[in-house]
Image (tube, rainbow, N blue to C red; front, side, top):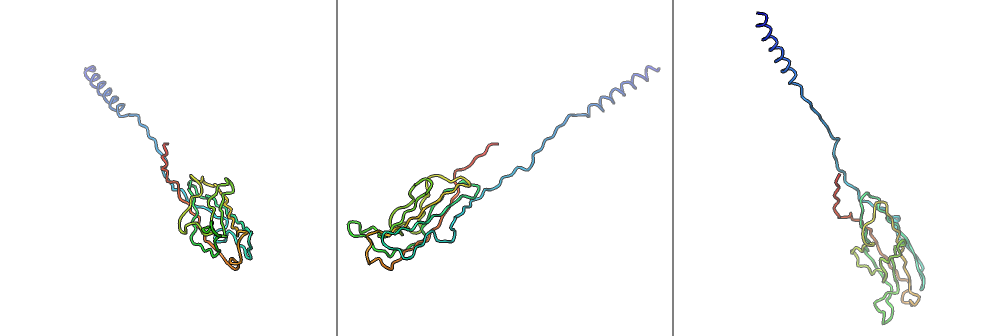
Length: 185
């Protein structure tokens, strides 16, 4: 009789042990910190912001006035740069034929680092309101360029150019590089 009780009891204990043991499972978890994106910045500085690049009173034939301005890409994005002559006046006379379209007052704008000419011609000859690219390609963040403006009154200017004046307002523009960036991480 003991055997009749022990066999079912042993079976019940074994089944209970299997049931309790079968509830245990392995598990694992992982996590990521916040995944995020942040926009870059498009900014630049102008060493003569809200100031004249050049001025000269009492100019006479043969005189040249030079002025420089340094632009720097202070943003975090690559950018292309351009110059716009916002408005201009030039009361100086033109040269005699065959150069009748050439003013006695000339302007040249040069990148002092590369030596590239941005403009060379009549003072006020840039098309007002039209941007002129400052080189090909984009400027990297923190890249800077210095531009030299040279204004010359031709040595052959005559009395007709006495007490004349000329002026121009310039604007510097930066535009983000539009090449899409794809980052695979």
